[in-house]
Length: 154
Image (cartoon, rainbow, N blue to C red; front, side, top):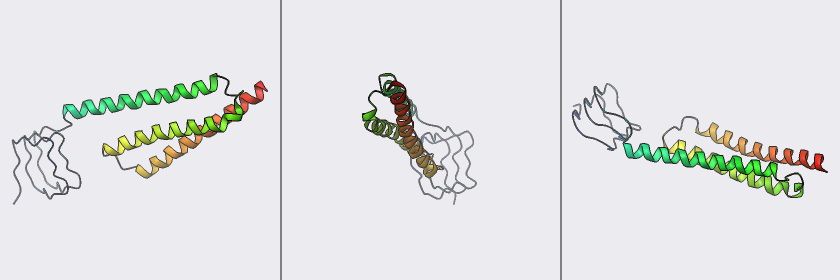
């Protein structure tokens, strides 16, 4: 027998892994409900209120702003390395490139974790490979810039 949830306030409720085939959610408030791995065949959602609750929108906005600021700081760090005599300090370039790789890898990993926690896991393994490739690329670029600057100044 199909379940009837019509006209109910179901905010934040978890239906994870349940069989809700042919259930009726018409005109129900299903904001922030968890329907992962749930059978929803022929389920009715006519007029249902869906989406994310306001507090989660604020949390997502704050997380996005934090990642944006950290990303900007990473760019500033890379700019400082290049502009303040990175070439004259080339004997330390391996240390600088390791620091740049660690910071870049951490930033990209935090972004990936945030994306996974939001439920976008379709490309997880390929994006992790991209994260590693970008981090290694940043290390190589900082080494190349250091070589060029040390050759030009030396």
